[in-house]
Length: 307
Image (cartoon, rainbow, N blue to C red; front, side):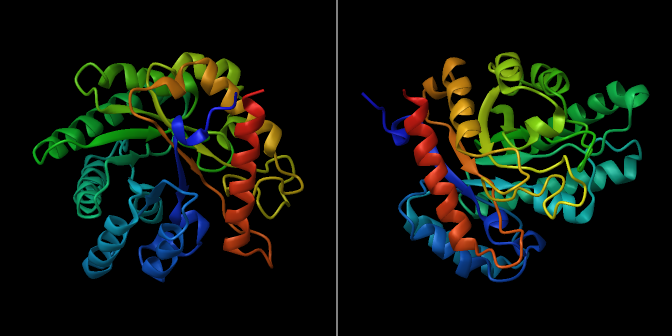
């Protein structure tokens, strides 16, 4: 008997990827967010930077009406401004810490239950261990700041290292090192892995998920293209599922669901958020159709993963 996916996870969508242009913190944020809030398929949404406090107030009212679980992603603010939580320059690192602290405040204004974090650039083999220590210290400071105002969960998102974002975190071993250092003091901290990044990292979910399972709290479902540098979606762009030249379609999402299930991800006390991170990339692609594509793939992959 097939188990409903809604019994095992909260099915989310990354708002600022589904509707490109929102990463800058301005634009038709409320209008596009309303489309997600009105769509009963989604039970969670991941929002980002909203520069104008009035926009945040309106978005909060909309989210309160929607009954969606809300996550706040720091990626738009951090990547747009090139903030680096593991910078070797104290001034740069402190600026990044302050920026993420302000994101925690924004997350509370929006009613978010979790903040998605991102490491900075990978400095290379010789300085990587030192950079990890700086990142851990930065995350300590951010989570201590958050604790002053009450509960808030945090996840560190795993990115690619060699192709596009060239992020410190990174390969599974480095992600687990950071989580292992923080979890004893911060049980509200965990990892977020993204299906679209496994090909970019040359990692296999069946191998990596068992290594991170004790810390894995959320996942993103996405696609990538990296074999042809002339591809319009080359790198960490999150094109639609099934795009020609891409790495991910229904079979890969199905296998990913199976790997997550086999490692206890869907047995958590509170259902984890599993969000699609997809966007229109090629001329003529439309956000609403890309969202419909994602919904079909998630539904089909879940059903097939139960067989």
